[in-house]
Length: 73
Image (cartoon, rainbow, N blue to C red; front, side, top):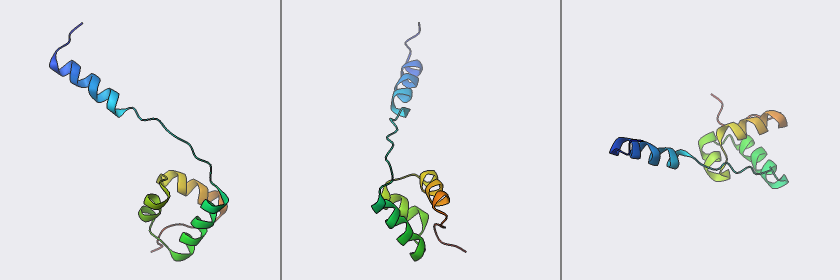
């Protein structure tokens, strides 16, 4: 097996790229906060930072709740 600088570098990159996914349930307070942001037309990027959730997670939740999210042009 070759242990050259390029092969070793690839292994380090592969180790760093792996990130554990932590799933968190939406609480009643989270849902209330989402509804408030929807009404205030808060940009999605800002909501993502505040709630520490991904765009996909937020969009799926509001889809199930039947509300819109982010600024509407």
